[in-house]
Length: 191
Image 1: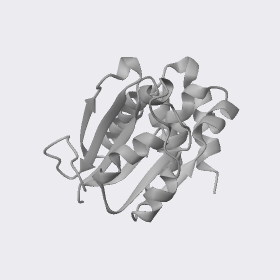
Image 2: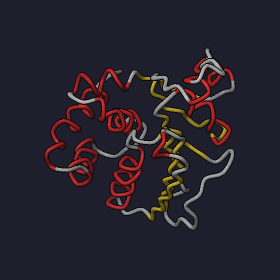
Image 3: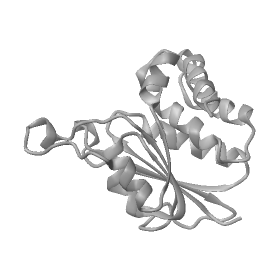
Image 4: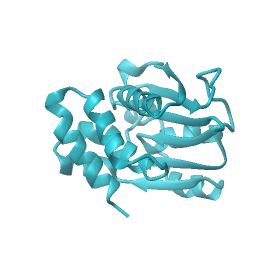
C-alpha cells in the first residue's frame, strides 16, 4: 500500500493532538506502519498547530511537505487556507466552517478573509465543509469538534465503524467516551 498522508491543522486547544493520537492508534491496530509528528508553534496562545499522520506498508518519515497531503483536516477555515498548498492534486480538505479570529483581526489591524471555502474549491481541492462546532454542541460539548471532523474522515476509508469507535474509547478518558461516540455517530451519519 502506498503511504497515506493526513495533516490535522488548527489552533491551540482544539484537540488536534488527540485526533492525531487516535488516528495513530487506529491505523496501527489495522496493521499499518504509522508515523505521527506534532508541530506546536504558539499553540498555548491560540497559535497555529499542525500534526502529521502518515501510514502505509512502510513509512520512513513523519513529515508531510507541500503537495503531499492526501487529506487535510482543518479545525478552522483560515487554517485550511494556510495549509492548502500541502494538499496533493486530487486530495481532500475536511474543514470546520468555524472562524477563529487571529490576533491581527482581534486587534483591528486586519479583517477575517471572506470566501475561503470558494477559494479552496476553485484551486481544485475537494472540500468537505461541515459545521463541526454545532454538531459537537448537539452531542454535548464544543470540545468534541475533533471527533466530529474525524467522523467525516472515516467516511473516506474502508475501516469498519466499530473500529473507529473502539479507537475513540481507547484514546479519550472514560468519562468522555460516550459524548465523543455520540459526536462521531451524528457526524458520520450526515450525508
